[in-house]
Length: 535
Image (tube, rainbow, N blue to C red):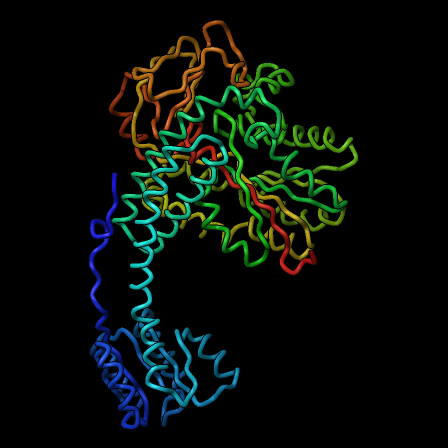
């Protein structure tokens, strides 16, 4: 597949923006107006604020140039009125004063540019061009950059042979998705999503070929897996003899983290890395592996009957014990631990009340936030949530909106004030599923839509699943002689042949997890250092 700029973006003509210049000495600015008109802008003028407001009500403008010092309404007073009429129009403030108070007021009222008199025609034209032509020029440059990057990304998908190459490649695909979505480049996004689908398929093949070897190897020989998160990333924070906090946001994709990161960076310096979830990439397996530092086959030895006999009491109901045991094992028992899980508003309120005292003493603190997971699951049950999180971009926006008013943000502000170091990560992501895969199973099979285990499981199309007859090969509980595992590949979800259409309709277009895809398995882990902390 080749990508050409002409095929994905329309040819943009020179901007012909409409400008209103408001100045009581407008006749003296004829040279400035002529330069703007020669560059293709239409320029209307007004000698005072009242006339200008009448013109704005009659005609839409792309940009307004406002003189600060005019008889009657000042420029900043005008700016408030203009924002009430049109919140999107670009505004350039022109003033004789370099006083900081004037500048701050203009910024507070959302002036887009600020020019101090005396002005030259070139200075004004440059400011206008930045505001009116800048977005179009940036979009054109982005399109050129993506066309150049497309072939490179295609080659990297075909040639990736190591886990680090795959994590770097997926990271770049996510960054392009964020950038093109922000620019509303739908044509380029369609091409990117085609690439991402190819990457998902090739990554799945890569995992199937290598996963048995990864779980048999020790740390350093394999990618950092769920069992390595605390030893590799969190343990160094405990060496300072100060409180350290591990935050796990359940079911957070890498693109959701990248959307949150700029908001978090207001309070913290962020150092990010990536790790790989174990299989199945689902909470009962991946999150227990994080807190216990052990694979599921080891967990079942400690908890006989897990996971079957724990389904009613909670498959992750003993994370606090796993966390304490792992920290004791890694530190020789010299570090106290504390664990919190935030599912509800009352959980969050209680956690925030306890947090200051917890940060007074050296200890390892773990906090799980379940909102993103609840949002992802709830999307499939609520038409309202489905409409609010229709696709990955909307899911990112909703995640950021949640974070801005969340107990997580409140907790991070407390940690920043106390100078606590924080490791923030997730247990698994989710993949936007579009394709059903029919499986045949007995009644004992698990109900999960991206992974199943039970007796004599099989898929109608073997290429849709990773089938494992002996679970111990991938460090899962072995089960009986006939027990096998099916793990969904790419963006497939499981349906049974009975009520086939009903289940296809219900679960198609859902965000699910538990299978093999970079969306579910390549995950962020970030060290947060309070801003202003001495290095």
